[in-house]
Amino acid sequence: MRPKTLLASVAGLALGAGFTVATEAREIPALADLEGSGEDGYWEYYEVTDDDNLATFQAIVGEPGDAMANPPAEPVKIAFIYPSQDVSDFWLRNYQAMMKRLEEMGLPAVDTQYASDVGDHVIQATYTDQVEQEDFDYVVFGPTELRVQQDNIKRLIDKPDTEVIVWNFTVVPQAWGSMQPLAYLSFSHLAGALIMCDYVLENLGTEGTMALVRGIPGAIDDQRSGGFKDCVTGQSNWEVAYEHYGDFERERGYTGTQQILQAYPEVELIHNANTAMAMGSISAVQEAGSDVKVTAWGGTGDELEALRHGELWATPMRMSDDVGVATAEVVRAHVEGRTDDIPLVILGRITIVSGETGADVVDAMEREAFRYTGIGTLER
Image (cartoon, rainbow, N blue to C red; front, side, top):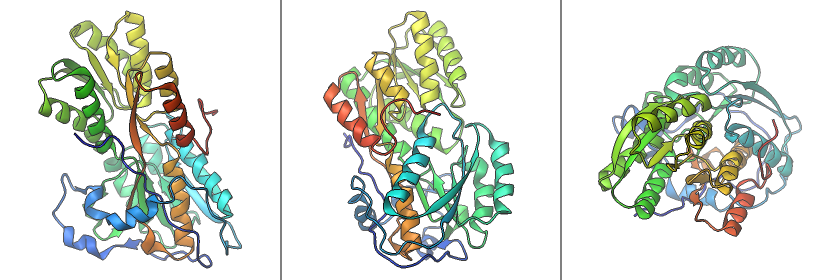
C-alpha cells in the first residue's frame, strides 16, 4: 500500500536583494532531454522536479513567513485569472493565504482578480486578452481545464516582463518544451486518488459495486476519477456500475446521483471528483433515504461540516493553505533573484479523513490546513 500522506512543497528561504522581473519565460534546459516521455502530451511532476529541491521547500511549509530584509520599494502587481466563483472554496483560500503570507513577509503587492465559474472556458480566454494588454509582474492562472486554456496560458508565458504561475495542475505540457511558467502549484490529484483507493480497499474490502460522479473530461478528472477507478478495479473485484459526468457542478452531481440510485440500487459507494458535486450527491442520497457511502474531494470547509454530520463517508483532505503559502514564497524567491530555488512543480499535503477519524485529530488537521484563511465555511 502507498503512504497515506504526501509532504507539502513550498518555496524557499527569506534572503535576497531587490526586485527584478525576468524578460522571458522560465527556461529549463533539462526538459529538452525529456521529449517524448510522459503520457498524453504531459510530463508528470516526478519527471520534472528535483527531489532535493523539493525537500528544501518542504522544510518551510508549516513555518511562519520570515520578514524580507530588502523588500521592493514598489508593490508587485499580480493578476489572478481563476474560477473563484466555484462552490469549492479552494480558489479563494489559495488567494487569501497567498496575500496574507505576502503581508506577513513584508512583500508589498497589489492584485486584480478576474473571476469566473469552473466551467467558464470562454471568459478565461477573454480575461487573457485583457491581462495581455495590462502591465502585471505576475499572473496566477487557475485554468478551468489545462488542455482548454493551454494556448491562453502560453500567450501570457510569452509576454515580456510577466511571470506566470499555474494553479491546480501538477502535469507539465510537453508542447512548451523548456519554456515553462515560473511554477505549477497544486495538490497531486493522482496521489489523492491512490490514497483514497487504499482507504476504500482497507475499509470496505475487495468486493463491491461503485459509481463515479466525474468532472469535466481532462487532466484533473483523468487523475481524480480515472486514477481512483483504475486503482480500485485493478487491485480488487470491485465493479463500476456507472460513470456520470457532472462537470464539477453541484446540480449535476445531484441529478447524476439521482440517476445512479434509481438505475443501480446495488451501488454501495459513490465517488465524487470535487466538493460541489459531492454536496449535490449528498442531497440526493438524503432525499432518497439511501445508506450509500459518498466521498468528496479536498477536505474543504463544506466537506468537513458534512463529515461531522455523518453525511460524508470520507475525503482526501488537502492542507488547504499550502498552495497559497507556496505561491507567496515563489513570488518572493523570484523577487530576490532565486529562481533556481523554485521547483517547477510544488505539491501540497493530502491525507484521508473520514467518520472514523477522531474529532481531535480532525480539529488539529483543520487548524493546520486553514492556518491563514480560518476554520469554517469561507465568507464570500
